[in-house]
Image (cartoon, rainbow, N blue to C red; front, top):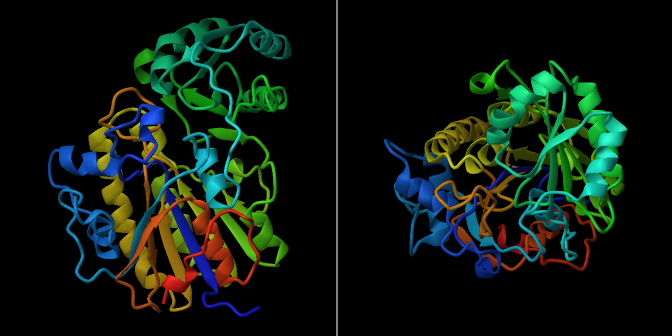
Amino acid sequence: MMTKFKRVFGIVLDSVGIGEAPDAAKYDDVGSDTIGHIGANYEGDFALPNLAKLGLSNIRVENPIKRVPVADPAIGYFGKMSEISAGKDSMDGHWEMMGLPVTEPLGFFPNGFDETLIGKLEEFSGRKIVANKPYSGTEVIKEFGEHQLETGDLIVYTSGDSVLQIAANTAVIPLEELYRICEYARSITINKPYRIGRIIARPYVGTKADNFTRTSDRHDYALMPTAETDLDRLKAAGLEVLAVGKINDIFSGQGITAGWHTTSNHDGMEKTIGLTDRDFTGFSFTNLVDFDAMYGHRRNVEGYGDALMEFDGQLGELFPKLNDDDLLFITADHGNDPSYRGTDHTREFVPILFYSPGLPANQSLGIRNTFSDLGQTILSNFEVKGSEHGTSFFDLLK
């Protein structure tokens, strides 16, 4: 196998969109702009020098991100991608990146789940269910957490995404029990009429409403990929596929040769940086979920900005660890504008930045019409045949 790059490192900045997508009106997301609005609204000094050097503002040179200068020249390749999947969930975005767009809409439950499903969950768990409607994850435990401590009832809720989430204080519902209930919920919601994208275990600790805190033991139970993905294709070709963060959950372990749970964005980057010391041929795939879970959904501009700056600093630690035959890309899976109305994901373009010390760079990758172009590009490097979705832009990386 002849490859230009021995190792490809991919980092998904979960929810870091870069402006409304062409079909934003369909999702009621006109005007959303996650990173643009953070740059404009963050109070205090805001700087992303390493992302700026890669060409982050070059992606939108006509409307650069405030306080993120256009690079001249950029040390990276820069562009943006729009999504063709029928939703704006993490699962949709990641599957599409890896050559499997989600064309059949998932199930959404703006009024909560029906009595049949709730009844099955209550019967299996032996616990009553409270909440059962769309909620912010922090607000639902603030409202129902003390009740749960008193009664042991399960807190079940959803959001604007295709999710069924179960929050449990581990003092009354041990982690193993929570996971077992979520596994059952996954087993009965695979097909219509539910077809829920993800069942999410949301453990937390604390003794009263003002000190409840979610832990890092969250676990996502996604639908199994409905067909082969680019991860499967890489693995079948004998390449290593390394998963950092919730990548393993999103793909239900399919196509992955080794994986690492993470406790935070910082931990995810530490593990990714550490993998540069590993001698392998293949693809390392990282998701940094805190941008979305901790700041986007909570509409916290300041926290989101702080997290971006922390990532940028760690990116500066990663750069010198890369070899000439390493390729790094940075992208996102959807938007979650912390200055926008509501608390849900936003339909946006996502940035795409490529870098290798062995490349001359400073070139636009343009606007890609599907996230699947990304997977096709990775496969092109390793000379592995892809799906019918997407078009490789590997020839631009020269």
